[in-house]
Length: 110
Length: 151
Image (tube, rainbow over all chains, first blue to last red; front, top):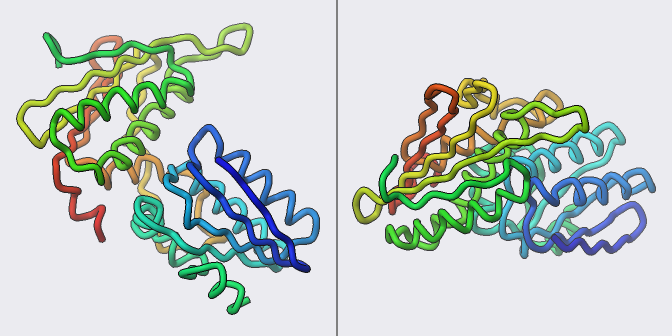
């Protein structure tokens, strides 16, 4: 998995490319938690090039979401496609997090 | 499943996931499953195998877990792939995990427990049997995704 982040104030846009599985979900989780520790309160995750997510990846999103809630922050997810979109829909995690079609629409809403 | 079904024996460790997934994806292609089912198959393989890696074998005095996992597939007819994942570890039926509450708000949702749920959604049949010293998880995938996975 490749993770790129851009920070503007307390908002961080994180683009995650590739796969979030048992092997690399912890890396993504740690990266996001580190941003929250550094004061980020809005995380916008660009998932347009994320091709795969397993239950370990979903676990990371829930941990990060709970972490942000405890810090009065919010997690925004955007650009889900294919299997990733399908997995969020059947687990109804698409109703738990704020979903957007693109990073631009997510930033406009924050 | 026995006889001429393709079979692979691996050490039950995280690296087995990719190898086993590639192995059964070859089977899926032979069975004529569409490309859209391959990521679903890879997901099911990760969920079932990580259960084996985590739970089947106890740690030894060095903190290592040693044991095997055997993966077998069979194509009983075109458009149907049957897979068995077997280990000789502690008797453990992963299908007894409680169903997650999908309607709970984030603060009340458990962060785990979605692996078996996803496995159920993406397979067309799923069973566990304890067979002597073996745990055997068997599932089938058909050419068309189950309706529940398309909701």
